[in-house]
Length: 198
Picture 1 (spheres, helix red, strand yellow):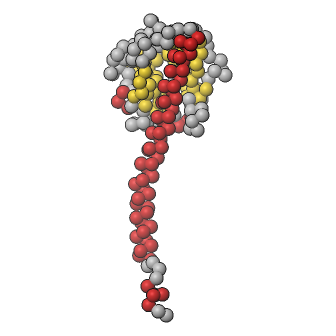
Picture 2 (cartoon, rainbow, N blue to C red):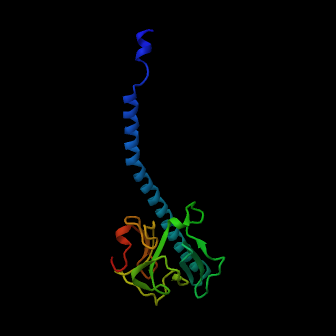
Picture 3 (cartoon, one colour):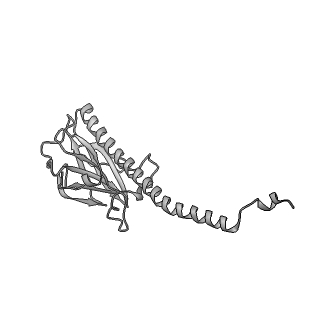
């Protein structure tokens, strides 16, 4: 046998070291990757909420009648419905928030600070089975009797459920905030998704 044949290949030590390095890198990278994927899911659903609110606002202007967007959680599935103000959404009006996003709806926790139609509460409530609504008048503005302020705006928030499926996992909340009577909306991150704070 020549020396070239004896030198080819890997020793057992080299294989073990490479395997350990790959294992350590995987242990570091996988949680970061999963966190990134979860944040992307939450952001996609949050942008869907913003588009839904904007669509209702545009529909109100176009049809010259008041429109509402209602939110609820039904069997752990966050749902949304656009409907004329003053009407009750039918079962066919309700759509999962994750529709057309390819996201399991049970991976999303919905919360709002709504208490009635366009009335801001001082706390966010998650996984509520009751219907919460934001309405727009025929000009696309919030109704004059809407109850909120700059420091306590109307908030719809989504998050990844924590160990207790009725509370959000820290650092995963995203929200849509409505701050003015003109219905001006903005997307917010964790620190902007608290009721009763600006």
